[in-house]
Image (cartoon, rainbow, N blue to C red; front, side, top):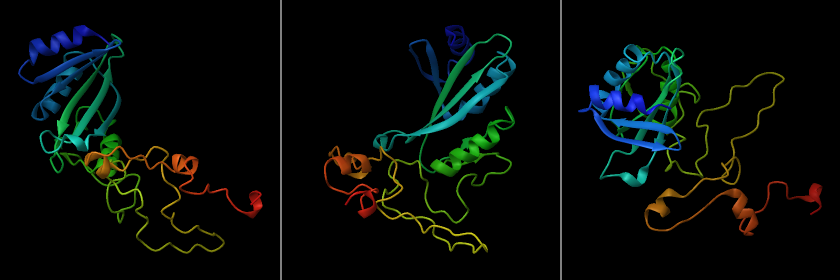
Length: 215
């Protein structure tokens, strides 16, 4: 990434910049949420950032209520100069952020995924609806306080002739390896509830346990 981009940004939009950082050559600028789209347009038009690499979000529930919970991340580069930058902004739970679909059409599905997984709404998005989960799905799976033992789906299976379907995962199945009990963590306890660690500690059986596996 290029420090020249950061310098230009601070010169042209210094009032919008809240913080800049540089970690091992990766330059990032965090801007005010109200300036999110304005700075994005400037990156595209003035600095020829014509390639949207990615757009996503990160959840920091421990920030609340002092600071906004979510951090939006935008990765863009120029195919003409090969310069790139990471842009960030903070969004509170329930707050809207301007859509960047008018800036880069590729932001369409990326914003829908962020909406689907984190519940962050985008102002001005042309078709804001779930893209990975079905419409009846309740909650947002990538929020760090999403209950680990919650069973989905909440709608009946469609019957398809000749097709057998598995029942929903139970509380001890289908969980990600690194899930953390965030409520206990926020209450001051570092509690890891990963299934793999549960098996190692003897608190739960491996899914392969059974007569067919030597027991």
